[in-house]
Length: 84
Image (cartoon, rainbow, N blue to C red; front, side, top):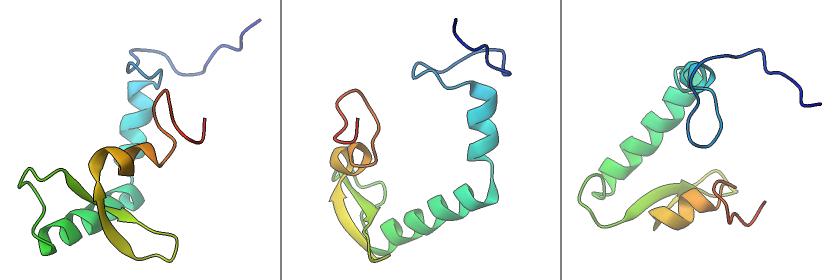
């Protein structure tokens, strides 16, 4: 028998509960991470210019430019993730 979640209400298409995801996205740690990457994107002149590039974190803690799709797929998201 499947375990019933303590959360209720609407879900996103990926199965995450909206209330849980909103709480996580609102954390100071998550906001600081996004703010740092947005700042780096602006510094490199790639923020909002439609070039399809995104700043990604590398293992050493540095950042580098990467194609957006590959950057987001590398983190283990989606149906065909390399970490699935």
